[in-house]
Image 1 (spheres, rainbow, N blue to C red):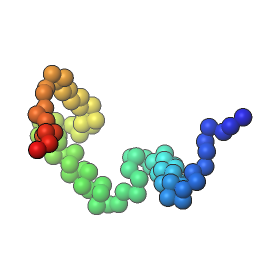
Image 2: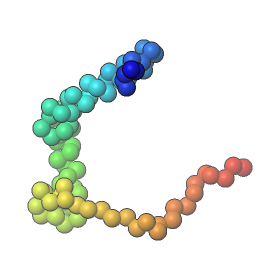
Image 3: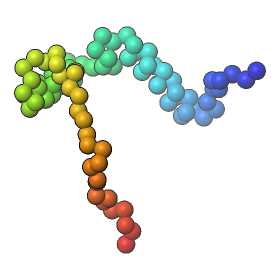
Image 4: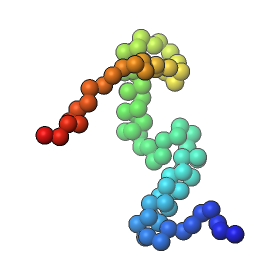
Length: 85
């Protein structure tokens, strides 16, 4: 019976798959879900969360995760550069 997981024969593909697996393992062990985040990244995230909270007039940051953005399904986007000259 054949295995569902085959080993990649291309060394680049193998490296790519190995990195995905490594990232998956790391993401499971972090409390905040941010892999290899340093203080600068965490500070930037906090600043962005505060900016979003201010722009949506949210006083309690814990409610930011509960924001439910709805987009109108009927919005038509103009095609850009779809017509070849």
